[in-house]
Length: 419
Image 1 (tube, rainbow, N blue to C red):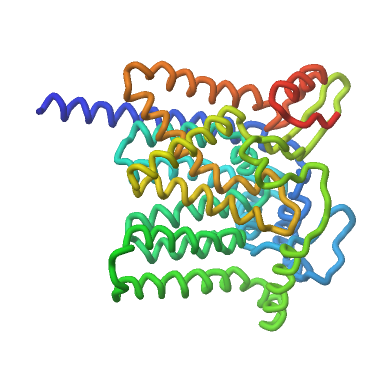
Image 2: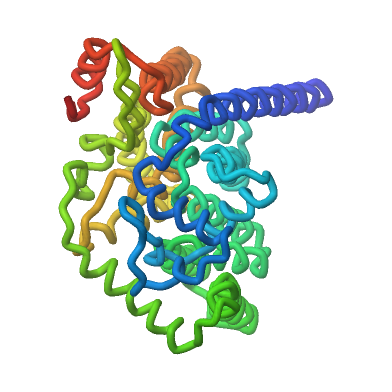
């Protein structure tokens, strides 16, 4: 008995060491060339530009009717928290260079890896499985890029993961606080209400509503809206009134439900799991090479992840496992609503489903790993995930590559060639 306990303890310490190594390696990769380019990349012309205007105390940055300077735009179509955090970062670091507004996203991206580990540990009580899930998530190219760019996706996702972890641990006040932070970063966090309702229904389908349920309901109905309103304090202190605040929310809704713009790299929701339309964020032409930044998934993670979701669904039908329910509900709650969206869509809208795809793949990898006959296949898949990430790494961070090598990449990664 003592030998078994010592063995478990040693295994736990080994997993913790590997987790620390994973985080440190992920930190190195995310901070690498973070200052490149020292200019706006893709939607940073909206988000990061507006964060810089917040730093100046610009009243116009909050107004939908104000005409912005040429080639940039005031970003009022999303709630302000992500932009405010970028502003705070530039203020604290005393710099308005690109690395200063990108650092908070990198930090949140690293925290999200830890949150995947914590959520998997809580759901499955298995640290090896949790490590596999964190490994998969850390080497997904899509959330990697989103954590290195001044946009709001990684803010919304990380706060949403905090919300879920605290909800699982029955710390409902903290869960509602992070739901408010997530909602104040991006309206997509509204799907968390549906997700939490599904979790509560699954856990309490045979129970009557009690005072504890009403307490939870009060938290989640009052605290997130209060936090949302607090993030607009600068809007009011700069001279805007409450009726303008209400009108701004209407303008945001009309924008997202009526946007009919076209874009060469837009894509339908059903294509996202197959990484068919990576988004070209940036290009820099050199004498003998080209630097590119794409928002692109790791095709090994994406394709094996789809298989893992299917296998997990089949297993859920047999076992009705709570943990598998969480994985499947989280994956589809953030994906399927896009099937009914009238607006233009991009691959990065798939980002909030990736944590749950990573959990599913971590779960299936652990199945293989625990079976001595299939252990080598789990090891091989982990290696391929890392290899797939390193293969695409240059076009995730803008490392200059010869044009013929880029063409080979687009051919082998099923990616649209922009040249």
